[in-house]
Image 1 (cartoon, helix red, strand yellow):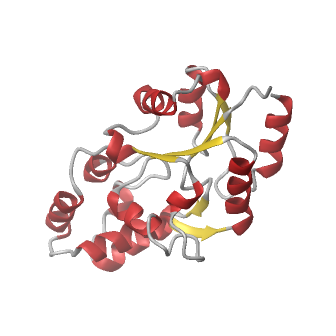
Image 2 (image 1 turned 135 degrees about the vertical axis):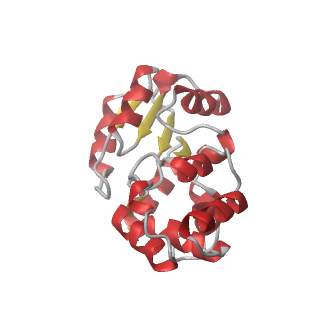
Length: 210
């Protein structure tokens, strides 16, 4: 009887590799030159954080960003800025997630994200094979839908409740030390790979030991 039954993944940095500087460049290209002050690898601030925590809608974000930029920005330009975070995807990572589900694990996603990123992630463009992110997970817990961002304890509680899971039967994988610490404080098992790291062997070892 395996101890860990639920495996929860962060999206950017774990499922795919991210590049914050590329996102800054994308926002610069569309006319917002101060993205560096707002963007972070793990948790956003200002209107960027308000978007990811569900305090404002995608359209409200577009209007406010246009004011900051001093020019009218389109939905697609905002999307172009946000999706600059995406650097690359490795098929072996997606295959590993698929294999975990085949092995009987409940596999979910817990991500600080926003409608612009998810418009791309939930489309057939996500994996290069015509599958959206939903194809790989049993359920998605998204910060802007949960109305709270990691590392707040509440978003982990929402996930545990939604999965009808026990913390001690759950493993959370995230590249943020703050997010991992928050999960561990609730009794959840954790794995903290570096952004873009191949975490398969480390995960295998944890599951074998559990």
